[in-house]
Image (cartoon, rainbow, N blue to C red; front, side):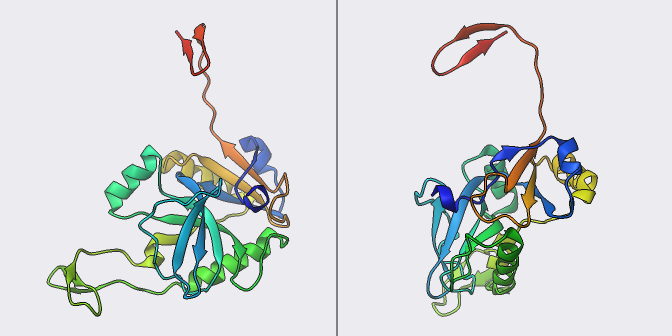
Length: 224
């Protein structure tokens, strides 16, 4: 899976990120677990796969996207406390797409990020509005006639990570990191193919703590 991984690897300081040129873009670092969404021949989500290649359990399976056999990568709300809180507050799970390694017709690993982003946005624009119709506060699935609870449409659940130029660093940091408590930002080289070592960087806050180490073992470090 190493040559398929489209997440950030290295790290930058905020000052370094602000100095990046026009060949770069900034995105929020979203909370959850890295995942690939594999679409079937009907354009529906057939599988969610982790960075290690293992299947992930998600309620998004079977949801229509509209582009057969494409593969999107991004952050699936799962596994973390923040993700569970967001799902509980919102009522449904989301996938935040930030890359695309296949447009359904060809692999995109060797293409620059700007091309992969364009393919991703084209796929996202094809997502149908599949919301159930509403009557007296209840929702009915088409075809079988059984009443069910309200569920959000696919285009509300599968969204593209926003992207801004490095010149907007202060605004994006204030919005996503300070106000929304995101983990940080990601800097993306718009000309880099998948797998390049300096293709994507994390920009995260760092806290320091002065403490005395009193015990260290194979699983933990105790400080006071």
